[in-house]
Image (cartoon, rainbow, N blue to C red; front, side):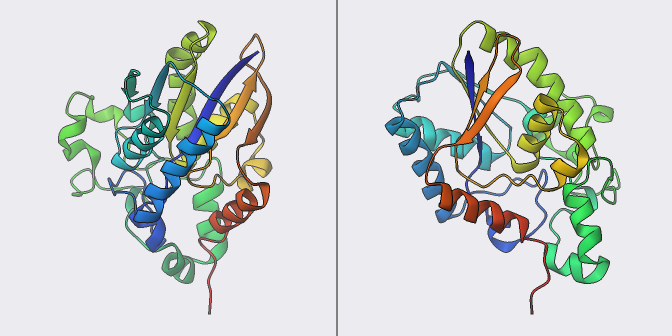
Length: 249
């Protein structure tokens, strides 16, 4: 049996403000830093150790991983960063309020944008200042490879490809791997690993800063997944994610 640990980054500034984030490179809040440190503590208490780690190229993912590895006294292990583990690109929605968008477009439409498999958000114009094709960090990537907006299915494709080509071979070598990424990145990976249908995907919510352990068989097919930590706390945080686009009085 093999294992891999997935962690969604701690609460970010845009999470706190309930804005669509996507590839916007916002930092952790104080609470997010605490969540990351707590994730490391939980992993340490449970006896987890790692040989290498992965993160996206966005600072909330990188900082979360740093705090986890610091708690584990694992800052020395190799870390690989890749844009293929970036959050789903939310296109022209990036930086907009989820609640205000729900008021303007309706809760159902925003829920579909956030949770459906095939529906893309309104796309960015290539000349928009938010376009990754204008960013220094992506200068080595062919512009046509960088998205201006993605459906979750698009994200599943890029994350699944990265998982299969870069991570699975390491797991098969018995390397112990931790991945620090994003809510939709991890939803995409779970979709890829478990072949979830769209109905199940709609209701899959990944809480911030809580380690998710996957046990895998000899073919790297999932046997089971479970969160570390208090179950009631996990459920409360999952529900908070589900409520982000609901209109409140």
